Image 1 (cartoon, rainbow, N blue to C red):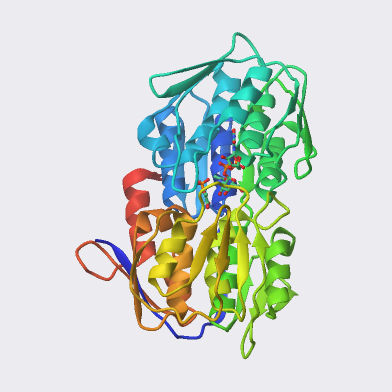
Image 2: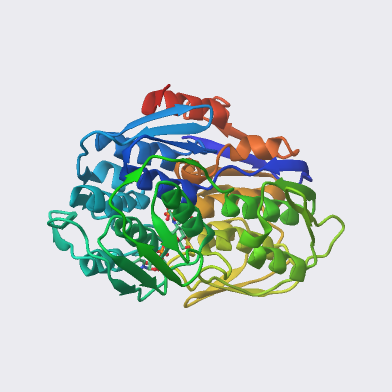
Length: 442
Ligand SMILES: CC(=O)N[C@H]1[C@@H](OP(=O)(O)OP(=O)(O)OC[C@H]2O[C@@H](n3ccc(=O)[nH]c3=O)[C@H](O)[C@@H]2O)O[C@H](CO)[C@@H](O)[C@@H]1O
Ligand SMILES: C=C(OP(=O)(O)O)C(=O)O
């Protein structure tokens, strides 16, 4: 079995460069479907399995995608298919993001129902409610959801019951080509929504208010391919900020955007770490510091991100005192707790809260990632555990961390990756093989 092996106890030093954001690049690639003319050039595209998956969805739709030196060239000018099949949606729920652009561009979209995953049931009712409000007919059957419309979608006021990131993105994309004005209220405010709106506007869309709870979209006749650079990954940045704190080290996180990371910056400062906003990034210095426990509650942006909750939990286990971590975004995002307990953590779950005993003496053992951020939390815990931690379930980690092993090694961590045959392998090698196999080289 493939595994990552971490030998705990090594301090980290130096800098880590943040890659392009997974959660920004996926909707941006989906939005490129809307480009009836020209080619989109997307820069700072991370080599992630989720990126390979969405590229395959686009190619299945008869879209030409080429990759060269971190840039994607996407040509969506041919006649498009309308189906995102189960083989891709099952690997990555974000495949559902092709639904809005396909519906707007072709009048029809069939997407395999994404189903639940390790962190919750994750329905898409708000996406569908939005499409229906814009005039689409929705049919669900045989494991697929189909949306269709005769003629153009019609602009409408849409109030989301939950500020869903995916629903906001999907509806925003669909509304770009609708007749008239669409207003999304109680919209998600995440930085990735702003990034998507910037790309859509570069394609010729008319979107205002992205990043606030009210987004106004004035429909246009058509969109064309555009150039766009993806924002840095705030969750990856946050993971490495926590890596500095958990190892009581000093790291400079290059490319981290402070305004995207306010909730983490303030929690780390409350714990006693020195966080400094610098030119081009954020420095975290936790050397010789006694970090103290804090309580954390996940919330939609600008609250504390759920995607940093497992990593924060690993850190809090090493702090002085007990803390309470409350997960309010997903109903089942505590799968990492049992694995952390196998590393000698004491954690009690009460409803949607976990009560953590601090000053844990974590011990290395074999653990398995149940999802992407659970995997990151286990690596972080491994960095400070006594002895060797072997982490399995790497396909989750490969979905969202570009070369996590290489980036940590460069800062002094004792961490290695082994393939199924037991040979040491690095992620860039692996990524190069995957790019070759899955996306065509220019
Ligand atoms: C690819 C991507 O960008 N993924 C991110 C996105 O996921 P995603 O877009 O799936 O997350 P949402 O914001 O939609 O989900 C938030 C909550 O709303 C619920 N919900 C959502 C839609 C809906 O129609 N009905 C409904 O009930 C979900 O089950 C969940 O409990 O935002 C999440 C919340 O910040 C992050 O954890 C994910 O990393
Ligand atoms: C939950 C996540 O992603 P996704 O929505 O793609 O499952 C994540 O990035 O932590």
